[in-house]
Figure 1: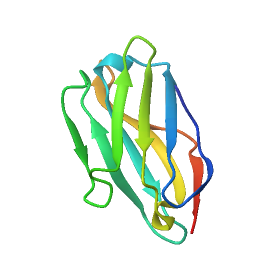
Figure 2: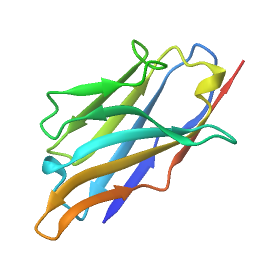
Figure 3: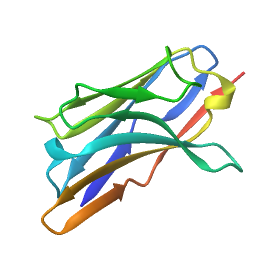
Figure 4: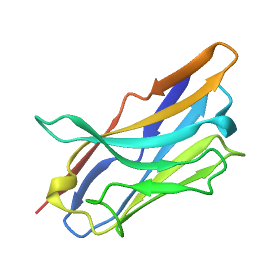
Length: 119
């Protein structure tokens, strides 16, 4: 199983970034996909979630109206479009997959991608 995030970097406040997460090794189209954010010195928190079919999304209050999660099941990829970025959005962003297969429930994690927003 692999979840490989990309698209992080350094951006000025008010700017945009698009994160991608390429998945392999499990049935992506059956998985609930999530993006988490871990700010320096803080716990990891859920920022966005999308259902397996892509027809349901949820966002943390801190990112509503600024971030958009989407997925392409044909490409086994989930995205996080981040607009109007703020310095408090700085941190590591992790992609994760949640679901259940014949072996039971699972959660898989990527290695994370760093996002730094300068003021």
